[in-house]
Amino acid sequence: MLYKACMNLPYAISDFARLRKDDFFYADKTRFIPMLEDKQRGRSYVLFLRPRRFGKTTLLSMLEHYYNIARKDQFDALFRGLHVGDHPTSERNRYLILKLDFSGLGLEQGVDALRESLLQGLNLRLRRFFQYYESLLPGQLAEWLPYAEKARSPGDLLGAFLDFLRGSPHPMYILVDEYDKLVNDLIARGDHDAYHDVQDQLRMAIPNLTIQGIHGAILGYILEQAAEIHLAEDRVRPCISAMATQAGKKSETKQTKPPRRRA
Image (cartoon, rainbow, N blue to C red; front, side, top):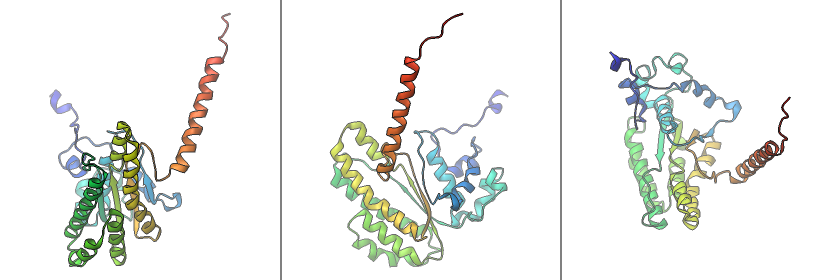
């Protein structure tokens, strides 16, 4: 009896479909979807800053299932009983989904090997994208391959991909997971030279998303937390410094405040 009363808590499971189908406990975050779609609030590009194990990957998985046009028939089964299941938005199941994950990249063989690994990994992911959406993009993989063969960097490859899909009748939603893993590992190791080299590699790809998104090709992309947000360092660092200064002043005020006299 006690066993049946316990919650079925997921451990190391971030796949939204599995959580729902296997009746795992799920904290409903779907009520935030309308906020992400609110164009007046400027949320076309969203950066999630949360520590590890705070459910960022699970959230991205939920968004992938909600917006993926190929999962339209699964909507009721996956979202029944959740907030967005009762209050779906007009954007549900309208998008081609490109999900990128940087967690599998390593630095054991140096930055040059990382660059090649990033290029090959991205190339494979884009091929699988066309295979997955074959029914919606018939024959597009064969047309895409010559463009992919010409790319010599991750940035060139992703830029060519976005240009190639510019004429698609379906909009695209891009999700980026574990974006910060490599730079966090390098910061922890104190390897600052390699850190800046890796930054350059990531910068070659990510700005292409922003540029294309401004022209309406992309609804948005979501990045995981970063130890240093180098896409917006000039804006973030002054804010952090100001917060630290303010916190220091408050701490000094507490320390210098004279003790209360007892009556």
